[in-house]
Image (tube, rainbow, N blue to C red; front, side):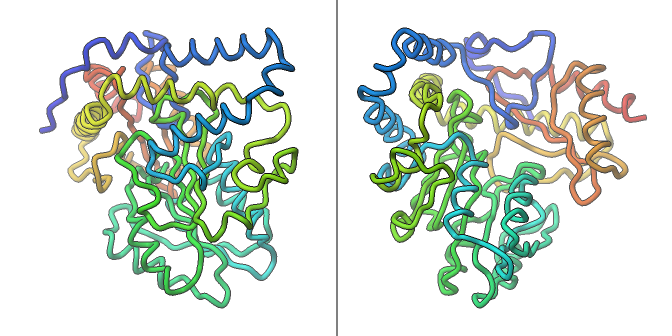
Amino acid sequence: MSVAPEPLPGARLLFSLDPGQAYLNHGTVGVTPVPVQRAHQRLRDEVEANPQRFFTRGLHDRVAHARRHLAAFVGADPDGSALVPNTTFGIATVLRTLGLGTGDEVVTTDHGYGSVDYAVDATGAHRRVVPLGLTAGDDEIVAGIRAAVEPSRTRLVIVDLITSSTARLLPAARIAQALRETGVPLLVDGAHAPGSLALDVDALGADFFVGNLHKWAFAPRSTGLLVVAPGWRTRIRPVVVSWGQPDGFPGSVEEAGTLDYTAWLAAPTGLFTLRSLGVERVRVHNAALVRYGQQVVGDALGISELPDPGGPLPMRLAPLPGFGDVAAAVHLRERIADELRCVVAVSSWNGRLLLRLAAQVYNRPEEYDRLAEGLPHLLR
């Protein structure tokens, strides 16, 4: 039986969550700590005090300074990284850069994120989906993806580092190595990676990596980082062409007129908050707590074998009985929120309903106990 870890002293006071809800879904959009909220608001106040001064005097250097902090945190070259609003925007930049169209093929997996599938389909390219079992091992994953790649037709491979719907850690570095001889570029969707696990993006060996800092690294929404390998940096085509275009990457991607850049500038405060708690301490706590949560929910539902995420992740699954589509998943998620006062993620994956639990330092074991106590009756 999994044992819940001791709470981190004072950690819960760092967040302004509704105390009437058990918020067990940090992974979806993140929760911003109060010190980061305040830093973010001070920047907004600075903008409104003198907008022209904010946008025209030193903003470029301030963005670059924030980028250096965030890139260093994830083990990426700051000169090969660009701040973006989120992973979706970063992936759109890569797809635009490749100029995909009819006749091209993109290899993905059935663990990928839905909006990424839509983005690929919108290019006109054919999407070849590699089916991977819920408990597929690393060897099977690497072999399946490599077998689907045909250099004469495949223009790009997209894999998640941590899958969203299925909460799995995929062997991205091994996939990159397997693809190297093919010459086909690899895009790693690392939306859940920064902050949730020790990360060395450059060591992954991918051509492109994009991740969110507003999920597990306590940055304000919307803060993402697009990392590009040296051979691609001069070829990047930004989604929005603006005043940074003559500077090339990364400025050409970061500069898009009068965006709200304050989230990016406040993001290093999120790293400071995380480090003040202890980065590894937080990771160990979250992985242990979500393991406990998965166990108590699994026991309540009579699930004998619970999926292993493949690493010490802060998210885990509890497969639910029966089948259902996306509408059924949304309906169940809302019932759990309304009737059990628990915020969770529920998805439909290949027709199976999956409940995804997350753990962050503001969570307590009794919140998972409450979910476990009420869920069997609700499902009946």
